[in-house]
Length: 426
Ligand SMILES: Cc1ncc(COP(=O)(O)O)c(C=O)c1O
Image 1: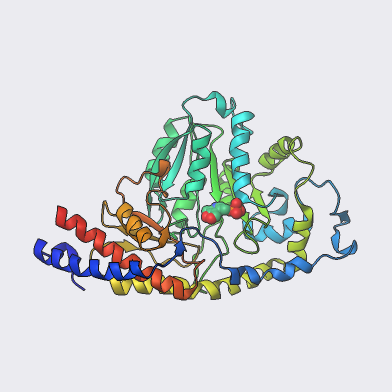
Image 2 (image 1 turned 180 degrees about the vertical axis):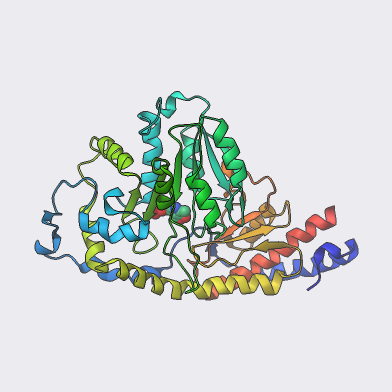
């Protein structure tokens, strides 16, 4: 395919005119397709339906001698901790089983930092006027939004193929005690699908922040969301940190949102024993217990950790063709054009497309006019501002493969048009 960057203006213009005709034809079809959020498709959710019937008697609801229909057991049922501990990568005593959303647990930890401080905070974060948080970008918009809403200054850390730019992270945190933490999606990152290298994880374990209450928000949302047998391996940060005595910095989060029912799953926060004890003390005033019946449902449905991993293979079988479809379309229609680049991830929920500089907003707008909803351009950066106006997060899971095929044809067409517009106006 022609490299657009080598075209003369006349060639670019004539190519553009041809593409505009194609675009008008697509527009006339009145399509309505959504590739904006990383939601599982209904067929994926169906595979958990049997969980809705697993509890029907008192006996079903008694686990570890606990009547889970009643109040109590704030930090979760022991057998459920055992179920998730191997996935989180630490011992069961370091886990708190939460409610329906890991994002709520993350919000809650930051909120506790604000009101009470974390275990080693000299003062609650609300009393630190210059509080800052590191945001590897492109990243997850909802992470950034949590710290933005609590008045943190968001500092962008560029993502590299091995994880966040650790030279920058080390340099910044070692000097500034007002930097209170960093957001991380270490496996199949949202949106790039990057898994942090062993070296990156080890550098996290040996960080020496000036803040005694620095928090690594290790959101391992995609820890078991592999698409292929040849999967990425993430070094275990909690183990590495224990070796270095830095375990109090690390807070790991997982949930079953994209395992069973999004919004009705089970979430987990894990940290050092000392941090877990501290969090439990504060939680005591917040709730008497999370939804233990949902914990029991998950336990009865999966039986053991192996059961969860087997279940994830079914998700992978449904997701893999969709990811292949997106990558094949990108390669066959945009490969060699210079319009953009992308990563072919081995898991997670997203494909990150990096458009020719200055084109992302225009691509999203063109797609919208043709009936394709994408995640807003800029959403993957702090304050919604992508300095290069380049990154677009593609979420292939929700549409059917047929819908995805159409949506990707239009996306590729819009990516070409936006690039040509830039080149023509240059
Ligand atoms: C990185 C990441 N963390 C957390 C979530 C939300 O998790 P939960 O449903 O457990 O709140 C998402 C959802 O897209 C995500 O991408």
